[in-house]
Length: 114
Image 1 (cartoon, rainbow, N blue to C red):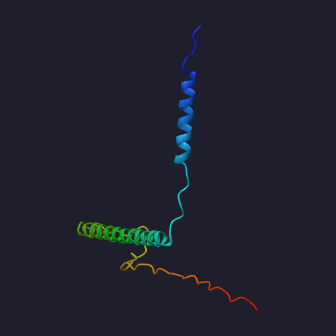
Image 2: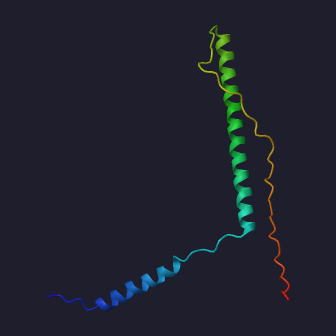
Image 3: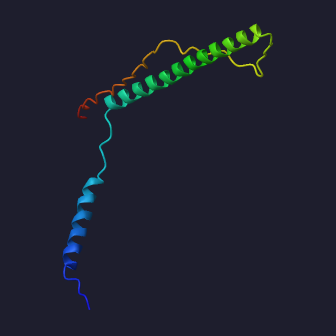
């Protein structure tokens, strides 16, 4: 019969690991207003970058399609698009969102009633 002599050691090691992990799972503090504004500005910049990339891709696809039609016409074939595609939408220059800083009114102490 084999006896496990270091069972208490394994149990205490497991307890220490659980105790250490409980400290790791603590909640983070809520972000400040400045951090929220910075995150909103970053999100707006990313959204604009995505729109700009889509616009540039649309223009590149139009150039390729125009070149294909030009080469097909030179070869004596007439090519018509299967579907009408919308025009490329230019997102324009990036405009940073305005940060609406709503200052909370300072609560002045009320005078005591007489």
